[in-house]
Amino acid sequence: MKGKTYRFCEKPVLYPFGYGLSYTDFEYSNLKIDPLANDKLRVSVAIKNTGKMAGDEVAQLYIHQAGQTAIKELKGFKRINLKPGESKSITFIVTKEQLKRYDVKKDEMALLPGKADVLVGTSSADIRLRGSVSLR
Image (tube, rainbow, N blue to C red):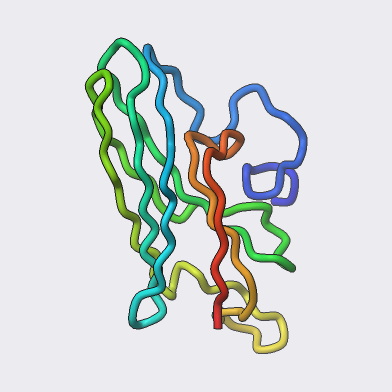
């Protein structure tokens, strides 16, 4: 429903999709987007606990494609536990099926060619890293 979920909401909300509290802080870096065979994408990112306490972080991967009504769509998430100062890399694999959108002309799901934005963050409102990939 337009305006009723994180996929379409453009105004600030009190608790965005994926919102959570932590006793520590995390830093995101080193976003890599690699096309794989069979129209898959490998998205990797490094996460570091920059706080003084151990904690869990749930990294979320969103995709946005120009011309689509959804602002962003969740395509994956990973929970990791990090000790203070510890850093880990995580990897998401995004399949062709996950990248398909509804094609009005064909009346079916299809991979729509064009630029797709890859967004990684802690919630739908807290995107830490951005990149893009060309879909064919």
